[in-house]
Length: 327
Picture (tube, rainbow, N blue to C red):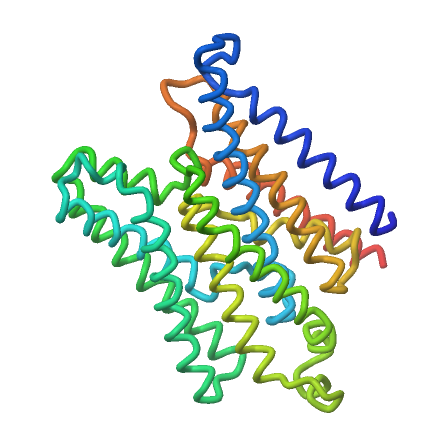
């Protein structure tokens, strides 16, 4: 399939998923008095899901290229866990200052906290990169940071259970959801996600060359250290922005690039726009699906992506092994 046809198909997938998401929900658009408000709320939610899915998918493309491993995801750098922890700390801080009842009314607390958490994780990673860390050290550092941040986040969540409303908010945040995203959240994350996507696309050629190995890339004129450093920076920006919109959402940055690579190829400047479109469509569809499953409340977005993403990823792995065996 040519790149143009693929992009047209992906744009159509985004449009179809978006239309379904606009008309999905417990409230009916037949009520004229509520129609404009419902469309506004669902439009902001749709935009947040698309941006979060696009950011995670582009981050996945960059991380898989950086580590030369199609099984890598943005979470291995620790910035995703850092962004989640930053959001949890922001919730606790807002509760301590204003009371738990005001937590959800402070719109920009979560986005700013998430971005600050991702930047803290990024700062630690850059310390190791400046010290000359190789990819293995970077991977181990990200793993340790993720474990540390997740442990601290679990501790904070357990502390928050003394307040029913705050504890419920903390758990919902960790499970992932774009239900609380509004126009301000989208406008806050939009320049970060656009800037990060364009930057990763710009580093695409260097990542292509690095697929042959860092020594080979250096001999061909690629500044390996600068590429490694800036890719980590922009992945942190993308993941921080994505978490600020949707909380903890798993598997998107792992399966979307992996699914596209057999179709698009390994060239990063072709993968990045395709991954942004497919990731956005995938998360919009998952959010809509979580609203239509029967139950007292909608299923958290992170659970939906996990239930769909894990089996899909196993199927992709089996297909890849079968093709390697047949070849």
